[in-house]
Image 1 (spheres, rainbow, N blue to C red):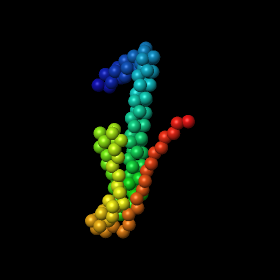
Image 2 (image 1 turned 60 degrees about the vertical axis):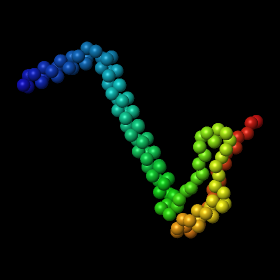
Image 3 (image 1 turned 180 degrees about the vertical axis):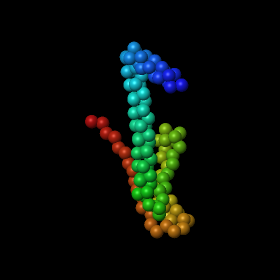
Length: 112
């Protein structure tokens, strides 16, 4: 039993030293693969923590409501918007609202 283990180890080492370039490339591939997996896991955990912190910073007592425009309407230039009347209606119908703060997001592009 010990002799078989010794013989297998000796044969493996002889094969490694006989094919140095192949052994080096195999080792390099394993190192790159492990590093890639570590990088992907780290980025995933970092993004998860970032998203969790972002939601936590909103607080447990806030709610964000946005208008939605279907893609077909967006292509036609039609945009859905929340009006001041919509805000009043939300405040009347939803219980426990202390205040409403409208936020406007805008984009602009210019040539020049």
